[in-house]
Length: 467
Image 1 (cartoon, one colour):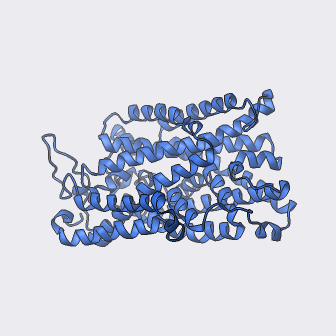
Image 2 (tube, helix red, strand yellow; image 1 turned 180 degrees about the vertical axis):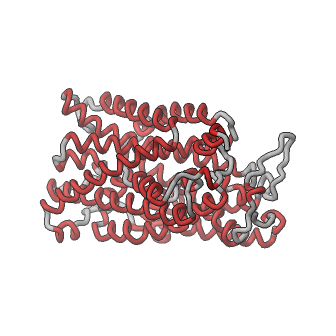
Image 3 (cartoon, one colour; image 1 turned 60 degrees about the vertical axis):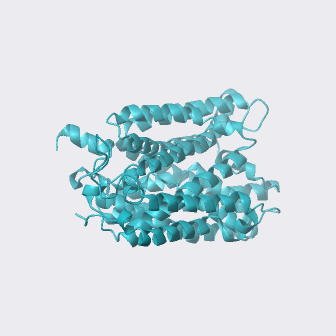
């Protein structure tokens, strides 16, 4: 393999990553996903769930979320086995051309996440600006200007790092993880030494606002939208690394920081006597607990670390959609687009409203999509998928040499069915969704429809034996 070819394999494109081009060991993968999970979104999410009490957050982050992440981690095996990106992974279930829809979905979801995290990072910077220049902090009159400047700084820095590529991301994650471990441990120590543990565990908000089913739906939207899983799993050296390493890293990271977020919000509520979900962001918690300037800067750096990973996935989604041979130019466009979108939360009445709306929408897309991918690969095809079909692509004159065909109508209909069920329950039958969730019925319908249609339309899901 030439140096030029190896660089192309290592960084970008839809080409299969051969064994000698895979650079992520078990520790690299665990640290990368731990660093992604230890993020301000996880902290904020845990703070919201604290309304139902610390016992709920414990079972939520330690038991239920790791269980629902098992199917997601199984997707990583597909990427490892075929050296395939997230977009290429969906080719068997959606078709060669149909998989481009997943690339668009990956791009839209992952370009949206930085708008969440960058806003939280910008809140941290308003406190930093206050320390240095005396400017208003987030929530005070006149704080919009410092907030806008914070968003701009965050978006520019993360865009530049993302364009550099996945090796830069790996090293950035290593530094960020260490700093976040210190910050999370510091906040945990502050809360647990200032308040009796029994009081922390007994606390529940006077008005929880939502049912446990609502938070389960948010968890699916939060966890299953790590759509870039195979953009990194394809670099894994072993199958264990791509599955268990990925699963372990993300659950250790986001599970712990959900607990940290809940502890911080409950600590502030015990201190002030007021629980306000709008103040669940880490910066407000850090400021209220008196952790200081260094903690706020660590939080800002950690957000950058998470966002570059997400933005890289967004870029790979576009590369997969348009099969471009100039991927770095695509990533530059991604950096520019995310800079604009990072200001989107300012258009909503509150950041809480934006956060919940965003998770609900992206969950509705990826819950049926990943369900169909898993049912197709493991239950219908039983892993009998060849690399020749996976990477055949489209012919210049139209058509494809892949047995998957250009479109897989079975997969497209099944995803659409699950998506419709999710949004009907989520927005039209909220009383039902408060009991059943919208996610679980969507999984059952999309997976069930695929199994039924695949049996009655066998020609569509046929493929050559794996090679």
